[in-house]
Amino acid sequence: MTARPKSGRSTLVILALLFASSGALRLGSGVGTALANEADTPDAPEPAQCAAMPAALADALTAREADMTLREAALKDRTAALALAEAAIEKQLAELQTAEAALASTLAIADQAAEQDLARLTTVYETMKPKDAAALFETMAPAFAAGFLGRMQPQAAAAVMSGLAPETAYQISLQLAGRNAEAPTE
Image 1 (spheres, one colour):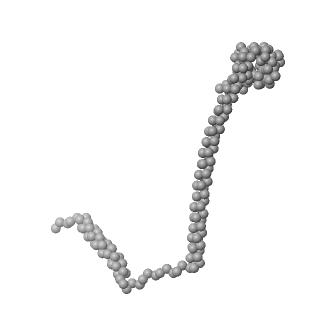
Image 2 (cartoon, one colour):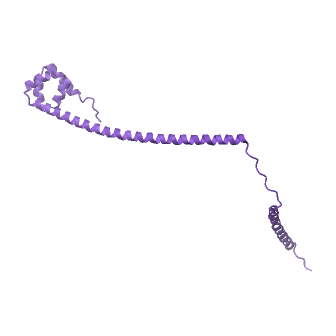
Image 3 (cartoon, one colour):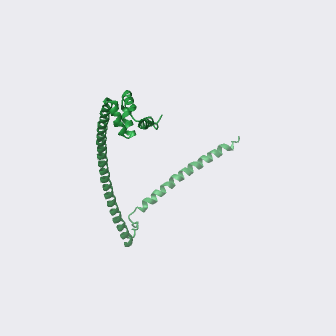
């Protein structure tokens, strides 16, 4: 007789055990379903009902719900008021921008008219006799006289300056020389 190796038998035994355990698991999984189905029979007692809510808790929840409703209404009112205020502010801002544009236009017209008046008066001083213009410039404040002399043609301004008293001519010269001294250089 030849001896068979033991490893073949042990493999068969392990396979048989695996098949047996698989069958046992399949039988066991059906048991839970069967027990659940048995519990659904009409003989089973009905599930227990929760006890009624205590009156104090019910009153507290009702009061809380009423408070929340009031707060929600107040929040809606406040939101509506904020929307109205925002609309009014936007309207006023638009009106202010319109007024600012109108004011800027008016100021531009006034500046242009003032500039035309100054140009016309400068032309008058340039066409006057230098001796008469010098007498007029003697009575003016040095800063005011310097403004006109700075706008005049150099020849006309020189003729007027030559007719002024030396102190007055010096004061006007200082004004002319210093009026752009503080202007930015960059």
